[in-house]
Length: 304
Image 1 (cartoon, one colour):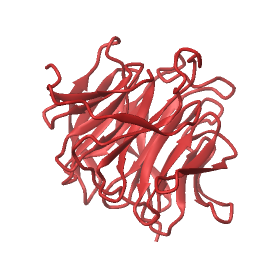
Image 2 (cartoon, rainbow, N blue to C red):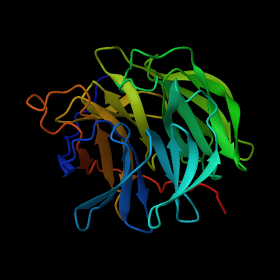
Image 3 (tube, one colour):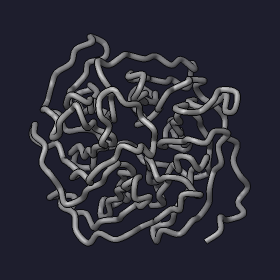
């Protein structure tokens, strides 16, 4: 279905970073700040829109995702395992080891559901190789994992390159993508038990359209997906139809999240990996746009 003729909102860089692989934006309502990461130049960033300041804290190894905790700390999905980080003190508190060989895999996508469970997927990326978005290193699909009560358990969903996690506003639908398959799936979701059922294809993209990467759901239940290599973020209806698209001045958007006090700003992380600065001087920047719809607060990890 063609995109609607709604007037395109203005996209502007919020942070002129040259992130190798920016990812995992999440809005902190209490701090009025956006957390995001760089996987390859491993660090947790915190951007304060009011001042324009972007602080960062290096991590000891590649970091695939972050979530905010009810305790005020940060949950980090590091290559070496899951840990809680107190950024103010620089403390790392390990939670559990990864469910894979860290010489061959790393965490790639993670997000909390409304009950405070942390869902996390993986990617085959041998240590010493570099991230490439679509990555030619992918192997067999790995199961999606859920962190609850201090340990990881498998769920009946898998992906070679896990991405696109998001939930409908009523938590009855979960979305999950495999970037290698260029497919986003929808599942019926039981929010009380954290169980998945009735997997079906929600959206599939051609190579020309780009690779589905990170995503967010707005307050109207529409799914926003960054298309890596496609230079745009698309908004899909609950039926999977294309409602609109927002084009970016870079080719490799990686993930999006709603933020600001009214949740009316869509923030988009991007990657500079493999892109010549002469061709895309803004590659790796954090972008923002006011799309005319609002998002919802991020769910927090239940660590207390």
